[in-house]
Image (cartoon, rainbow, N blue to C red; front, side):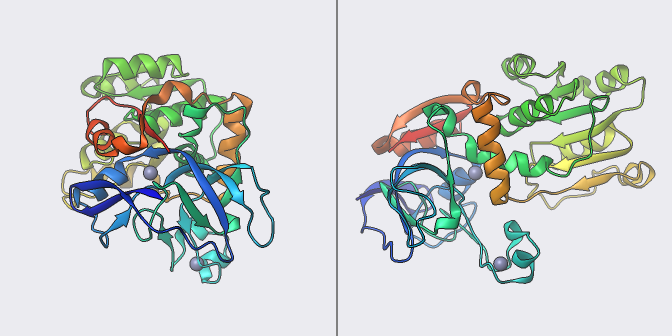
Length: 334
Ligand SMILES: [Zn+2]
Ligand SMILES: [Zn+2]
């Protein structure tokens, strides 16, 4: 079968690989897969993996052979939870399988799903209704991680939320906040096109980062936002999240900050505002089920966040194009 294989940093090939061993597992035929920033970092060698490695963790497919327990029937369209958890460590037992001590991610630590078929444990499969149209379905895995990031947040309609960074994840956060009934949602991005899109998807206001502090202050009588979601992953945007936060606010650091330089952060404000900062990681199965239900009900609209799809054998071109700034979700048709 064909798969998209990273043979070394920067070298992506569509190659013939062996059929997966589905003993004790379900066999899935992939239909639509999404490329995310993590895939791009792996492809460039910024996140080292063992080569050769089949890429891919944003995966929608169909069950061609049910697993031994028959949890999901043959023919069912499914989202694959790309996180493999052991099920027996203390964190798994505490219901926090997304933090499993022995966990692995498909496409990074194990061969992924940019392939015609993949063998998967049945408990990683989440049925996806056919009513969620094909390109939109390619965003469900990212939506699941956004649902996880917002799970347990104590926010109500009068709260003011700021979302910094309006890529796919930032825009999904705007939609989820709108679906939760938050009326004042301020999106922050340099891109005029993404400010427009955020307003169309439920943001009440949008601003350029350079004017964000004054903008948020004006809209909140000088108090700042009670919830700030940072969806970029830089020290600078994290610092901005602290600045626009109200006293007692919660900050969700959704972007992964890899920089080690920390001296630019406004540490005194961290203390003075007694900020709650959350660092969500991956997602739980229940988050994917909720994401699928939100998309199926129309509460969250995924189609506007999809840029385009490429045929499976043009993967190298797709990876090249996905790094263009301004691109929303790029998918591959398997
Ligand atoms: Zn991803
Ligand atoms: Zn575990």
